[in-house]
Image (cartoon, rainbow, N blue to C red; front, top):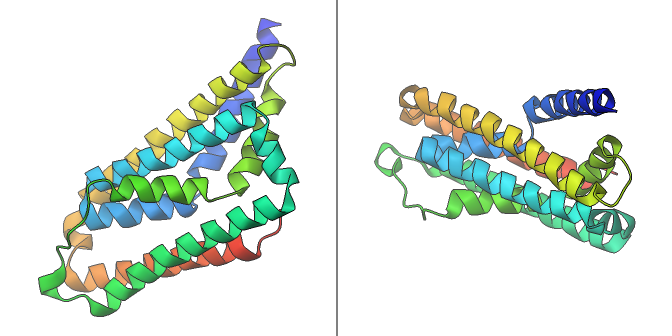
Length: 208
């Protein structure tokens, strides 16, 4: 039985690693905010993302994520909210790319904004409900402790995500001197804005 548990854990690590390293909206938002405010903002964004993931893990263990997936109105309402929020963030980046001048490189930001953006972006993605409710139960044996086991696996996934996104923030911040040159920064803002809008559009039209 211990051998089976080890195999399940290794399989979970493998599947989680593939999912986490695949670039998505969380990665794009982390890069965007790192370029805006340095490594600290990138890590704060990552913390917001994993806070959202923690909420999804707990919701999955309690059966709430499955209820959301089963409810068409709630699922689509959350999907449209998440899509609109990504489009909003993308349009912000495009606006900065168009209006940016050398004198406006430094912009006032609240200290909690990157965290809040990461949290809302992840929590507004109903695909996380599908993902967690379909992934976690596969690696948990049925029993009275199944819910706690799913929470534990969710925390493992969250930790892996935080390490990966924080590493992204560190790498991007290290290249920040080049990427923050006015012309380069405008191009990057435009690119990241287009990417976030594209992710929002895909979320809006994508079926389950």
